[in-house]
Image 1: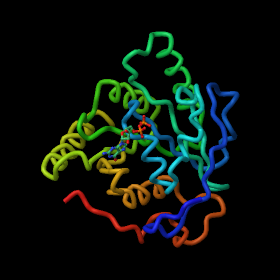
Image 2: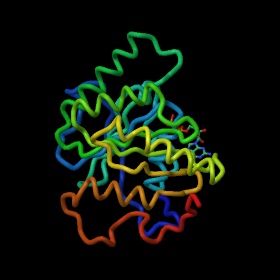
Image 3: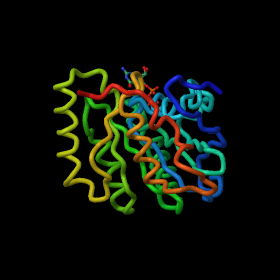
Length: 227
Ligand code: GDP
């Protein structure tokens, strides 16, 4: 396990299983967050960055796993769930239905789910397929934590405008959104401690959690702020 020079601690996280249907899901016994977004939005990079692990997500990506629901556990504390990326240009109708079914099963049945992190590439903003996902979550009253990715790809002004725009568009769409959007760069580490803080708030104090000093990447992580 690697230890980032910026982090106070690396969490004991591990890939547990990948599932396609309800009967394959692990027990809903710990507070949980899920991460979702278009393919290529930077989901793997963000998960790896959150846990200071270069290959945490790739490791689980044996063929077929990208279309599955991948469950990671922070030991006896939290579940982190990597939902299959959506928006493949070449996906056929049947595959799309399979995706919808798996995500629907997941969202309908995980009683321990505290929030879904919806990742959006800041350069693209909210796309139509993101709106579909937002609707899915709204219908079920599931809190949505919006996350803008790859903010390093924009200059400060464009970055600020993009973030303002996403916040503005989300308001009328997502009653259950935990605003404002979290602005992140997995490449540079921008916004990661702030995102961790919000994830921890959402997860609450998990089973067996000790003092605040156990927190990963905060407060000792140095960051470059969007400004
Ligand atoms: P996924 O399909 O959503 O899991 O996306 P990946 O994490 O594999 O990232 C897709 C591409 O975006 C890769 O080429 C990454 O290197 C790149 N990428 C991901 N996050 C960032 C970021 O914060 N900044 C920049 N510049 N590139 C990123």
